[in-house]
Length: 451
Image (cartoon, rainbow, N blue to C red):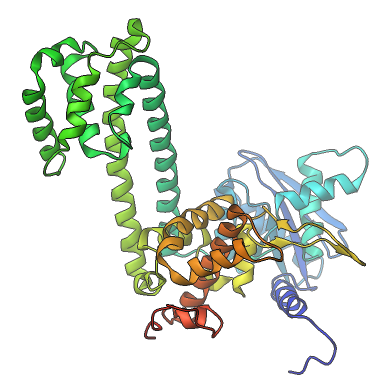
């Protein structure tokens, strides 16, 4: 179709989105705005002019709202409407239950962002009242204005991936907390132990040796000192073998044995703190095991979706990194464009233009923070192994005009990763570095990946 009316791509995408919403909220449907809570559900039935046809409070749980939807259907039919469009805020888990109940009755279901309700509440009057009754009316009014969105469809496999991703993120936060506690305790009572390895918490030998020392001495380092370096080495070897390793670093063991004589730190707290270190080492090991198990399950879900080969065709993106991103996005096919996915992550630039004035461009920072974090983590591995991303990073940070800082360039690469994941999944074609560079092949770029 020609573009003689001057419509931009954004105009066409917006028109298509409004058409999809209008199909769910047609003019001949009544609108049921529902403010969900634990045991009190406020239901308001309105027309498209926000005229309240009926309202009722239901003292029930969300999964018992089928009675409320049946009541709404009766009110709408009595008022001459052909059907009902149900709307609510996507808070907690209750909106999922409501969406299922609406689908069982053939009712269209949409969601309104809580931020939109908050802004409308401020514009309603100067009192900024917040009550269930008023919020239900505002939800219905925003739905009539199509200031709503279609929630992610329920899918068993994608839903499982989302739950596994949430568990992995929770475990990562727990593991980081345990590492911070370990470092803080050792800096207080035995700082010399942290200097025995360049990266102690990444060294299998250091972790095994600390486990042996803390478990053997219970905070009294004189017992290990009497043990001697040779027998300490044997004990660490046995511990490493038990953990699946092969041989220790003798340098780290010797450094730790020498550090037993160091008196720096709060000696009076050493015994209790090292006992706590022993317990934290066990917790940390178990947390890492659970993370590995969760990541294995996530990769298995990718295999079930037949996406592993597609997402790992992007050089530098592992199956775990891709699974973590897709656990936050859901099925990328639900986004009309790759830019919509980038906006969902809050990685799209926010322009400030007015007349001849051009303001500073920043990221929107809106959308899904956990998706933004997952994409950001994927940058670190991809930037060093993917020649396309490395060349783009160098270009963004070294160009003369509008040069970006390293952090800004990494955010741009994170957005690029999301666009490429959307492309390979929606098209079903493997990643091609030649296509990724818009048809221009930088120097030293490997041959394109076979489709």
